[in-house]
Image 1: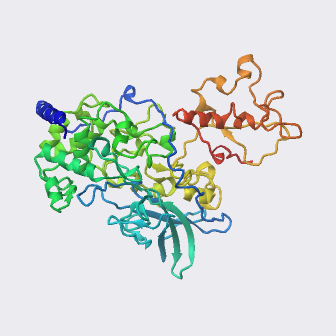
Image 2 (image 1 turned 90 degrees about the vertical axis):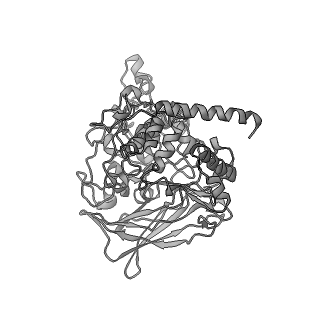
Length: 580
């Protein structure tokens, strides 16, 4: 520590101590009811542009296993139960978030009366070996490549792996956060019934170094170095009068959960302790506060929160609240358990999405999480302007998205929608469809299973209604084409109501202004078809009304994404879903 820092440090400690003492007398009880989130407190929906930092990793296209819709009898869906595993790896000094990823799967026997296959079935997995070498465990040893699933007991037939203690490092330590896994379903004779692939998502890109000195330990983009690990222990010692740094130096590793667990009657649980302490110093921010520690933002290398919510411009705060609110929800539970430390920490935090702290419902980490039903009521499409699941927690573990089932009681929600924070379509930063392999394999589009009327993927035939949950769709209209047009894809359908907030001139640039008919393909407008003497770049080509470089659906969506705004789809099959 420098001489200047040694003078400033006692003043800093004194200031923190006085703040905690001043606010420490604030007590509260749990709320009788949960109020709605004020609309004026919500951040405007924006989707920050993603930075492509991983071009070297996924140079080759992801290999998609074959699937024949005419002859295949089974559909195999696999996902990571809790999404990306976030790992803090200061070993051997101490342990906070150890490695451990669990895959789950369901095998669907295709047919009109869809059934989940579980009798005399074995699921086995095989980890791919990257060009850098096999995956490592926490000790730096090669991880066993193969393993089997077991049938999970319960109301729904789900296959699950044991905890896979993989680290996101391969070979001699190359950062590998999204390794691929091949999964096969075989019957008792050993015949392979179905095969698919998925990612084993995990990351050590935790941003402790941003405040606690040090640098990334692996490839300049992940892993905790000894400087960061040591500083965290020293800070803990100064604040809490512990001797953790000396204990670690003596060769006695510290397990943080030995004090900070739900079962501990005195220490705060780990999530409440970490968020509760840091919220006092990192407040008055948006999702950037989350991204300071978690690899949750598009500027990070791993960017795990990369699903359709991110494409809609919805960031962490829409579900979890701002850091202050998130911390208060955790501290409120610990305070109700009589833990004085929770009351002291909460006294230094001001809520932002509620008028007072007691208006924020207490929650237990990984038990009371934002409920999907807060926004998705299956009657109307949620608005990206006002959608928020904050303060609307699941009542127990069974109600978590990762444990939820459809209306038929047969399928996990993740079977069709994918893993938490990577719901289909997900934009994996290490390869566009790296996290979308199961739906792309079975229906050739990165979207939830059965989307765009693809019920036949599992049911072998079109279905009139959904047996899984009500489908809320915006009214659409087919795009009228010039006479003589030859289609190589199904006609695109257009949800006009979904564009109601745009200036009409954004699309109807001529007809809307001069009073002419508004049909794109009318004579003299985009009525040209490919042929001799017609340039592919001609703006009057019918195709270029929608795919042209200047104006159209696809370029508009791409431009909105580049500006960090919520946008529509950019994949062909997401628009071309007509029946002709």
